[in-house]
Length: 327
Image 1 (tube, rainbow, N blue to C red):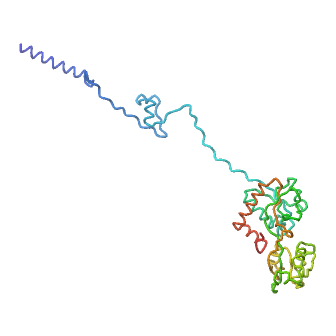
Image 2: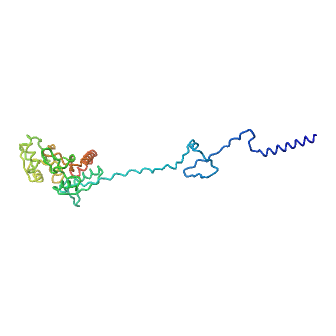
Image 3: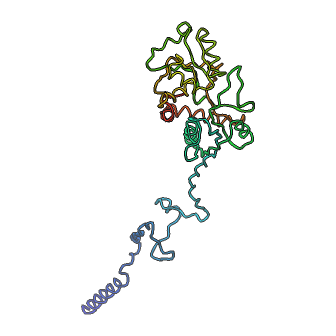
């Protein structure tokens, strides 16, 4: 009896061992299996690629990818190319007409190239408005006609702006910029002389050299009626007479006198008194001539001239040809 009891106990122990081996690692009946932790692969870098059919990598749903902040593929989305920078606007090309025979404003140098105050200022204005300019010489009588025919875009040849009651060499159908230099009358006297006051009474009986038939002669006759006007065929003859003491004063164009006294021939003399700029006689100064429809270009040139006056460029150009600014 006791032997059978031991035999049954051995059988139970053997059966328990077999069951343990059979169910090792499996959940016990009535218990849930412990949750397994799934490690996600590291997020691929910019140059990494994930195998499309790797069975070890779990597939995520769209909701899970959105929750993790992962980018969602969109096969229908098109990548637009980055917009290219806008091209710089082309510089406008302009043809500036001038005479080429009126020193020091416009003339040909020894190398045959155009130069002078008008030329230098024209190039500075073109640079300011960002235009490519070329200068072309035409005879004085053909300047405006060439402009109207479209052979040029502007005339810059010391052409005076018409004043009320005075005609213009430009005629009809054109417009002017503001004056880019003034041309008033002025007196010159010998450096050794004490000039009289610029009044009609003080100049009574004084000998004043003028160019015959000029606006300077007409102005002096009206403004200083008691003075003795001595007419000469051209300003150079009047200047020579002043240097020799044959006249007391010369009344002529201020800009021409500035250039004369700055040279060797005019070292004897100097400018005296104020500028006389009565528009009825001396106009509004010299302006750039344009076709009537080119108002936009006129406004741009006026703005450019103001900028050159403000930054000192105008004064530097003026000093190349005159002993002072002629604005």
